[in-house]
Amino acid sequence: MDLSKQSPENVDFMIEEIKTKLRMVNVDAMKAEHFNTSEYEDLREIYEMVKNRNNFSPNEMQAIASELGSLRK
Image (tube, rainbow, N blue to C red; front, side, top):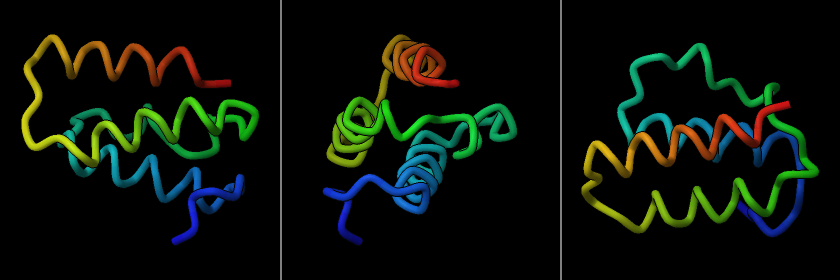
């Protein structure tokens, strides 16, 4: 998948990957349609960071969830 291009499909892919990797409980609160493509680069940075890490502390998970929340429409 070419994530260098902004598209709703890429947003959906990244959100699903983040939810899977973080094993998020409240997955209904994070749907791809809740995110603007105008915030694409910020979302991509979060995705890349999550993808490249194996473990997250509770504080890190909270910070990631908070940051994703700030990117929502």
